[in-house]
Image (cartoon, rainbow, N blue to C red; front, side, top):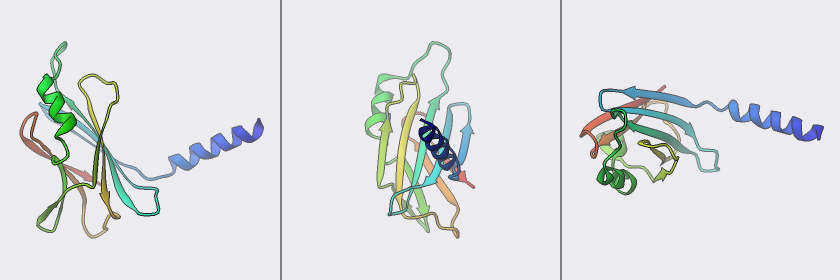
Length: 138
């Protein structure tokens, strides 16, 4: 029993020691929260977790069409700029989180973060307000 307690505490401290960059952007239409960390697999990837909250009045809810677009057509809305070209993610997975009027995604780009280039993720909000947001991770 004591061994399990020590193991649980050790796992907790190991998981907390990974550096995770966090960014939050808010304007009159959206609240965007994002984290970035390098993947833990043998092939290093950049993993972003993004939550998008449309700003709604009390009792309002997101239109059914927007819900469908945010679930099935979001893959081209996230990208990075490499030189002069857009680099789209290898994987975009919508995460059903159970939070009303919240859209959550796991976004994976192949390769490690390059120290020479800033770690920026761009989100093109095509379906909510047609604005591009730049998430800069430090």
